Amino acid sequence: GEDVEQSLFLSVREGDSSVINCTYTDSSSTYLYWYKQEPGAGLQLLTYIFSNMDMKQDQRLTVLLNKKDKHLSLRIADTQTGDSAIYFCAVFSGYSTLTFGKGTMLLVSP
Amino acid sequence: GAGVSQTPSNKVTEKGKYVELRCDPISGHTALYWYRQSLGQGPEFLIYFQGTGAADDSGLPNDRFFAVRPEGSVSTLKIQRTERGDSAVYLCASSGGQGDGYTFGSGTRLTVV
Image 1 (cartoon, rainbow over the protein chains, first blue to last red):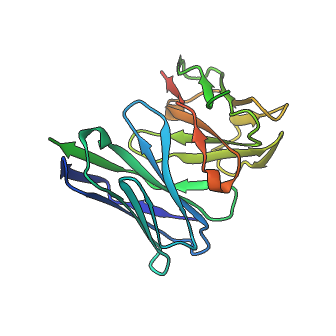
Image 2: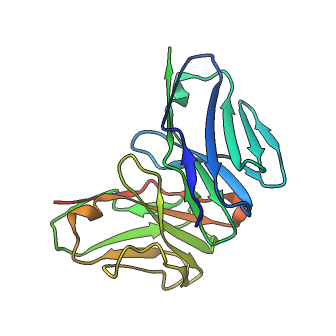
């Protein structure tokens, strides 16, 4: 089955850019998603990219996909303290379900 | 409804008891998913419904876990003879199609004491 890996923790200063990385194993993956989870809350869909795209930009968010290396990244420009949360990479590989990574905790300090 | 609704938001039960967790998906979404999230982990797939039928139940950990969706809308996850290891947040999601992603509910936090 699909395996999705993420680094566990990232700390940045307010105003800096944050880059959260993710790798996956199934080369037939079609849709790739980023979700945000704040403490005690459910999962919020941030953005997604289709596998035939290299990049997608949505306001402060930029998603980069390197299909050859099976590497996905999420860049948050001008990171704010309100961006502090856990970010999950999730991959849909044509089976019936999304497979999630363990999440990256982003801590933004003032 | 406007979003995915899960009830109860919190459930504390004694070891060995039976529990039911309810999910009310977004109106018109035919696909419904149950995931389980343990502390410090990502969500893990349990079961997927397309309409009334379970299209994939390969994530259910054992036969104590069962889920139904009799009318293709509301779903109930049922756990028999609960164990302390069942303690987790149970998340429900619905989807209108692959490109839409999944919309998650806020989850039910189950604590087995």
